[in-house]
Length: 391
Image 1 (cartoon, rainbow, N blue to C red):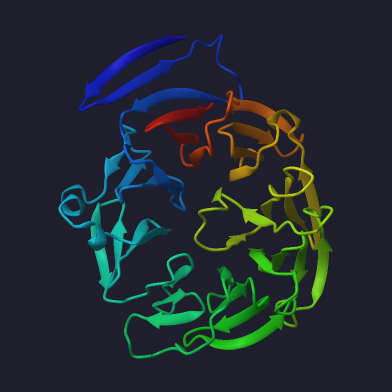
Image 2: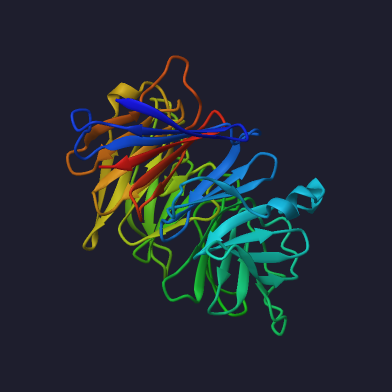
């Protein structure tokens, strides 16, 4: 293997790595580039656009960066001039993807930033303070769903702003019809189905009583079928009409039955901004199980559910922090809490590759994102970026 130093600029060092055919592994990720000296304040979040052609990175100092599959593959700072001149409290309090836009939420407005032309395309003077972790934008109804409430941008419809909020909301997901959305609450242990444009409460189901240990920890919508995870290690499918139990499994059960499952898909459980919607499967994590880390995935096959447990004997006592599903390859990328990054084959149910092996003492959660447009894996660590290409 030869390492060639290709550029030095403003403390940024770029390495391009060229692997001979002897060292290349068929069907594996090969490191092609290293970028160092970029991030000085740590990384809070990293995520990809829906099309899988952009990476969005939020730095600890409220700096925002983009990387694109358009070469050269280097990060550039969003609003470089604008944000650097603003006081900290004037910067966005939250940001998330919507199609090829990043929605920046300030305390008094919301801006849609087009990642392709690098411009603010829409600005709405709305205050959605306190709802930063659970927001959906509905283009169909030109409204933001924040928490359980609806905020229309034209202000001609007030929406049901007085609806009860959940006691610690744990989920928000839009149904395929584009009209109904589902929310869940941890302490109140309710699932509620609402409908647009006004946010009227359509149905409500009580999963457990207020003072019970049940607690609703997460929800996911798979091919318009609702999965509900609760604090006793249970995952159920619930009817969208009556709320009755249609299927159940206990993949996270332990001696005390207290582990709350978390759903993961194309990102991380700790930083995800809304519950998961997918047409086939969802991964789950039970890292706090009293029997050690347990994880797997629930797959919809026809009208049935198949529960697949994942056994990673070489990982030691560490949890699963981030997952990316590689649909065309039938594989998944796992980012573990100790810094390991693994390529897992869903058909053979084994590890294909240790992309980043475990190191003594661990390095903390691997912050990674996958660009499906070019089969590129982006791993951020130690203030720099490592780029891997699937070959």
